Amino acid sequence: MTEVAKMYGGSLYDLAAEEGLTESILAQLDEVTALMDQNPDWLRLLSQPNIPKAERCALLDAALAENGVEPYLLNFLKLLCENGYLGHLKGAAQEYRSRYNADHGILQVTAVTAAPLTEAQVKALTEKVQAMTGKQVDLTVKLDKKVLGGIRLDMDGKRLDGTVRTRLDNIGSRIENTVL
Image (cartoon, rainbow, N blue to C red; front, side, top):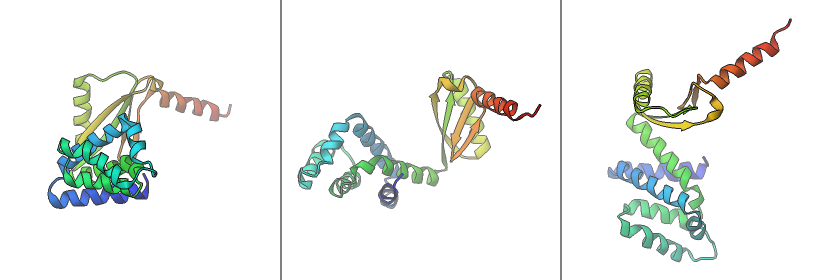
């Protein structure tokens, strides 16, 4: 994440917290970020320096103001657009979410498995991580056939790896390092 994204995302969060709008702006920011991801041509259009800033901001108004986007978020997007920083929107949204999670005791955890987890397994894993950390857990499950089996948890900059792939790699390293 860039310093620009951290600064803008953090500033938006500070404003939202001051106004008591952190949850609604988070939800809308997620929607706008997803919209930009799904429509990269729109993001490119809004980033064109040969289109006057006023016209680009008018496009944002036309697309978002009528759909009930919080005025603070709309002004934030216009500010990014005017300063040529719309490419940093995703990073700014990540910083906003990071600050929101920190203030609300939420830990984002990614579980990587070779096979899909059942609802019961997801619930049990979430409860176990919550008990371990003492925080509310926002669990995302991703599939990766390369892990072969087991589970890898990525959380708060740490990785807990109990995958078959890692165990096999560790055994291979021990065999290579064994002097006969």
